[in-house]
Image (cartoon, rainbow, N blue to C red; front, side, top):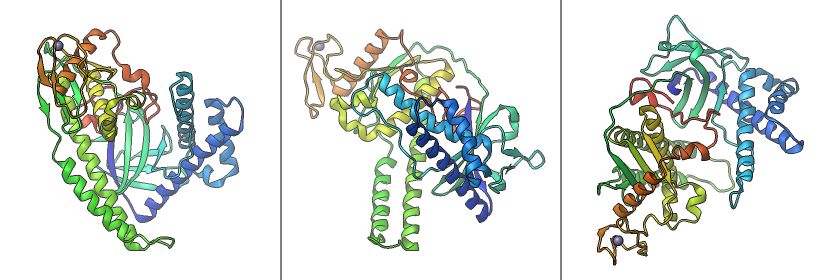
Length: 404
Ligand SMILES: [Zn+2]
């Protein structure tokens, strides 16, 4: 299963219609959530049925395709079930009680409500009463390469630089590679991307710092135009959009980089081990500072696991405790402050960069626990498509076709 994405080209009134569909989907999701809060023992099925009640009550809900209404209710259900799961697992701290959404950016259709143009092979028409109409698909990959029945879901997304259409396609392809006989452990760093158990340091890509400067500048320009307690000017709106576009660019660059590095690691190793930097682990972790990179890291990890499944390689996430303290050769605990950059073992005289030492520890821990792989899947709940797989947008562009 993978996702194909196209930019959409249409008229201004069509874009407004998409906005309206997104607003309605958000309304349905929030209403479903409210229904769950106000009633006892509401099931996923009850929420689905409730969308029909909403359609009768509100004309603009009725205008939205019935499968899109259902996906909105399913979105509400996925945040509810995540909350239930957290309670069941008795994790410490906040359980993530579902919240109302205010700025939804997408609406999702299932198998109806849309139609691809068999003639031009470059257009999609939305057939519900939201009047979105016929839109042009801009992108290099040919959606007609796939059978319409392979397309599970179609999603419309609003971004700072326009509107996009995603197709979720359920075709599974696995690729077998010759084993390389190599294993690698990664220690995620702050000053660099990662240090590995072979003693290499992968530097951070340069755009991290460049982007930071550009983002700050755009942010300052935006705040200068902000008027407190008044209606915002058009110029403020423009500055805000410029800022949002810069963010979009950075996040795309990040994704590209994470994808490239992950693919290389998976292709040249049979086993890749890394720290399980889940939120619960991080709270108790001295590496708290790494939470800054949390978003980037979890993306990187998703790509590692995605390619791991695709190429039949093993990926292991280990608990990050003591990985930087213990000696990777003899196991002696050697305490260090954050500023101690080298690991010096008093008993076996090992001297090593602290992060390389940690990376080796991570690999050793992984090799001890290879029995339990795919830890991520257990912890991670449903993905954005409501399915228990790592489905990543653009995964097909790295290699010809892909699997889940
Ligand atoms: Zn030692």
